[in-house]
Amino acid sequence: MSKDKKNLLIIEDDPGLQKQLRWSFDAYNVLVAGDRDSALAHIRRHEPAVVTMDLGLPPDPDGASEGLATLQQILALAPDTKLIVLTGNQDHGNAVKAIGLGAYDFHQKPCDPEMLALVVERAFRLHALQQENRKLRETHADSPLSGIISRDPAVLKLCRNIEKVAPSDVTVMLLGDSGTGKEVLAKALHQLSPRQAKRFIAINCAAIPENLLESELFGYEKGAYTGAAKQTMGKIELANGGTFFLDEVGDLPMALQAKLLRFLQERVIERVGGREEIPVNVRIVCATHQNLKELIVAGRFREDLFYRLSEIVVSIPPLRARVGDAALLAHHFKNKFSSQEVRPSMGFSAEAMTAIESYPWPGNVREMENCIKRAVIMAEGPLINAEDLGLAISIAAEEPINLRQVRDDAEHKAVLKALARVDGNITKAAELLGVSRPTIYDLMGRYGISYGTSE
Image (cartoon, rainbow, N blue to C red; front, side):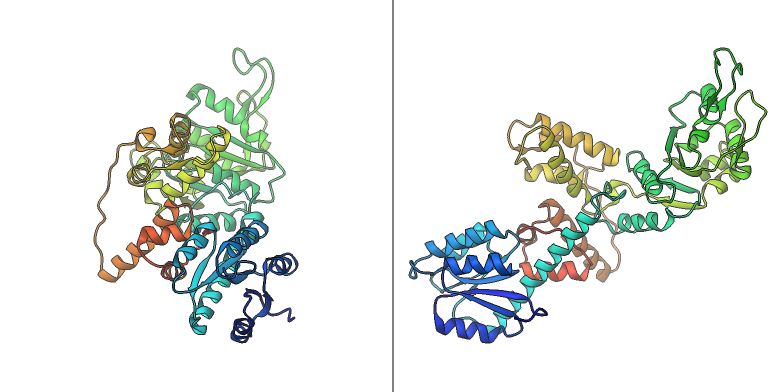
């Protein structure tokens, strides 16, 4: 057997058909089995990615019971195997039953060698894609960006930009609505940088009273004010050697903006009540949901500080602008919380999924997470209904553009939404779109959509 060729198992008890199929697939390492035991032996030894099989196997060559039993055992041993059932013209019912048990596809006898070769080749490609996706998931399972769940091109590009920027010491400004994951990205910048072994310190400028914020940032000396019983380091100093995340920087008072600007220019701080300049080596990452340029015009934010903080600007799209991500995240959070609440096998009704896709999600991913958690807890049965979500449906109209772009955009969005809605199940997505599986594979290839697919 050639190591360069892929293994293809043919399960067929007719010697004539065995010879014909072996001849048709000389591009593969063809393994032949005439009964259940030899088929299972090949599965265990050679682990073929694709199998073709006749359901009429001994001791039931005129029926399908032995073939269906063999199919189930193969998939139990190797769930990722793509199994193609060969059936007669009058055996459509058993072919459908085989698909229901997990077969990849079926092909009618007498076999058209060219058509069967295309089906087999497509099965090998799908198997390879799924294996690649699995390896990527395993490789990136502990990645700092693994918490970003998206198939939207803009978000995927954003993640690539984070990976590019992370190794440098450049100051990064994260812009995005509340709940879009700014702190997740800030932590990813730290964990992907050479500073990952040091501390990541975060402070929310909007959550701390103005009279306490200076002490929180820069620390204070003993006796600096009433109650200052001991010398205390500020958050910037605590982050020395690591990363300091300044969240909601747009709420920073003007007086502290001047002091922060001096730190960014000189890289030294002075504690409240102190005179000593303390050098601090820290990477600054900041974030805001506000329009800082408008604040500059209004006289509420220093222009020179803005340019110091925005050496690199990363804009995070809101959930409503991320095609297919609402359904994708809904499935993710449903799986997460149904596991936590010991409520397995939960799903969404069609009305619930429509509500999820239509709702604008002003609170973004944080709102989605809370909504799905509540729905998992409150749902009375295994199906989450629209009432469990408590969302008001609002569908926004899209602006027309040129016809080719409209068509391509609509196809791209439709495939993303369908795959997200059915949690990556190719067969169900094809049914939802009203197309064949080969068509949906072609569309996925055309628009560069990769999915950890399930059949």
